[in-house]
Length: 262
Ligand SMILES: C[S@@+](CC[C@H](N)C(=O)[O-])C[C@H]1O[C@@H](n2cnc3c(N)ncnc32)[C@H](O)[C@@H]1O
Image (cartoon, rainbow, N blue to C red; front, side, top):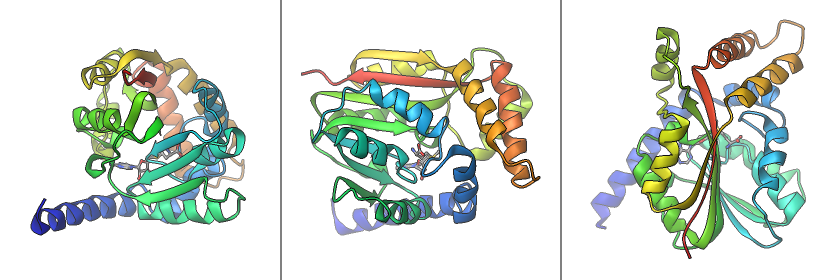
């Protein structure tokens, strides 16, 4: 790659990052999300869903994990603290990374957790990881074929991919849901289509798990935890709307597990 190409890629990554930091992931916005998801989490179910999911990964001490869109680091901290994994978090939001590093300094994790700024689509990790992991981050990435090829390449032979993501539910989509998805710029698929995209990137043993009802259950639990003092009104409203769309079957959630061949 020549210097002009590299400069162009770096500036387009920074542009994309600046958009995220100025819209959905302002520092203030992230701190509000953290109040409903729980300490160091910005994704459905926070530590509760993470505990359930990480149990499925068969992590062993010293394993190398790539956490794509690592956010505030909650998953990375859990995998390092409870399983002794080495977790490298990659994220495109400077605001997320600066808060993640603040949270990391409060923990005694030596160098078992590291964070890096970057766009997964422009990153190259050659057969480096035992596990590629991501929670509710790929909705930001329309180039799914390139994404899953990059992750396939990043895994050691036999390595495991696990991700969760927002999905289109099976039913029709209301104008309100379409407007929400367009306003956020999300790229969604049904759970079945999502599994096929993973398979097309060369993964085997693909499991595409429809967790739409569980998503609704977590939304209810999160709403119940919100303080009753009228604070965070926009979060309450947004969660109530998500819950209605979810219970109508429009807004789904998928868990995906797959393996790179040996
Ligand atoms: C909803 S947050 C989830 C954060 C974290 N996974 C968690 O469970 O709390 C999505 C994250 O994906 C990151 N992200 C979006 N596009 C990305 C990309 N192309 N490469 C790396 N990270 C990305 C965002 O900056 C954000 O931190």
